[in-house]
Image (cartoon, rainbow, N blue to C red; front, side):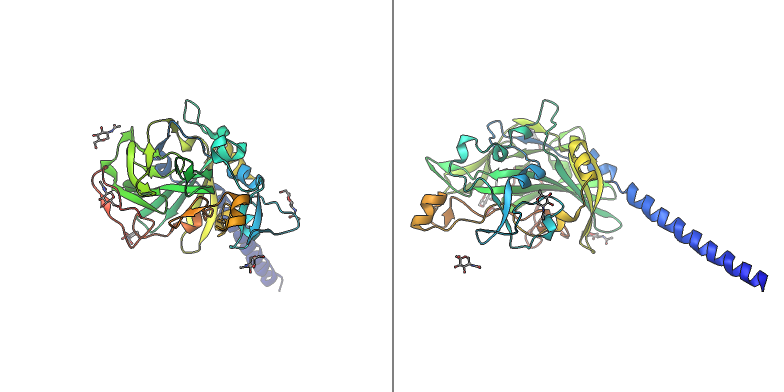
Length: 353
Ligand SMILES: *[C@@H]1O[C@H](CO)[C@@H](O)[C@H](O)[C@H]1NC(C)=O
Ligand SMILES: *[C@@H]1O[C@H](CO)[C@@H](O)[C@H](O)[C@H]1NC(C)=O
Ligand SMILES: *[C@@H]1O[C@H](CO)[C@@H](O)[C@H](O)[C@H]1NC(C)=O
Ligand SMILES: *[C@@H]1O[C@H](CO)[C@@H](O)[C@H](O)[C@H]1NC(C)=O
Ligand SMILES: *[C@@H]1O[C@H](CO)[C@@H](O)[C@H](O)[C@H]1NC(C)=O
């Protein structure tokens, strides 16, 4: 009896030990989560426009200056939101500027909107953390997304009239790696973007060079006047080698499990790493909007909000959805899987609508 009891005890202890060990292993594995090295080795180096006025923003500073609204009405007794409470909000919530409608975007106020603190220094370090998300698609293919966030999108103007201004601006570059080697690159441009084979873009060492257009922050692989125009061709995107921004110096890093639609924190750098260490990754699942809802275009409303619309283009448009809504599970290299041409010449652009 005694020996049977001992054997039983032995097995009980052994399985308990195994459970403890496997828990430990899980824990260790979790702590070891890190972005693949190639995500940093081949990360884009980006140039903001020399005349830029709306710089990269820290998402936590943005959140401190907005309040959640549904249908232009503040929700929640508190009225404030943090990164950790973001995903408790519904998807019809607009993070609306606490300062009210931005009546004169060109005067540089409020300061959190122009985000001068995000102007990169001479090393390319911006105080506003970037966001790098690595999404492994299968045994051979990994997509690495480099997300840029700005508190304001200035759509550009003709004389005193300008279009497509909105609070909150998410743009991204994506590099697809096949067998850990970069294969092609996608740059987002407003609601569309362009894709190129890796070898055809310009590099600094191993890193591709991208350019970020004035105001609206669309991404391009060339400097100059771009083939994107609105307002009957009167406004086009402009890029040049203004301020070098090296996102790898300061970013939050995450892994994205496409099948589970789950984000986990991975290695970050600088202020982004420090911030990330005290946060959950849940905010990335939030499907709501990062800026004000488009203001109605009616006589009385206009006086309060500065809204106007001319031939279906409006001064103020709604803020954008976040990274989770940018087709991270895409099969092609493009955000729009149904319309993806991969160019072999950097002077080619996708047709923009
Ligand atoms: C939004 O608010 C307006 C004015 O209060 C109201 O007429 C309208 O029904 C609301 N819309 C929704 C979708 O709740
Ligand atoms: C209210 O907002 C503050 C600051 O963002 C936050 O720390 C606190 O948890 C919020 N309280 C509630 C009840 O949501
Ligand atoms: C980029 O590469 C192209 C060739 O693909 C070259 O003509 C051009 O001068 C390069 N631009 C810069 C800024 O280096
Ligand atoms: C991996 O995923 C990519 C992107 O969807 C696809 O093009 C490729 O064929 C897949 N490879 C394998 C081995 O499944
Ligand atoms: C510029 O855009 C137009 C219209 O969208 C398109 O037809 C044309 O091919 C584009 N040009 C280049 C060089 O990509």
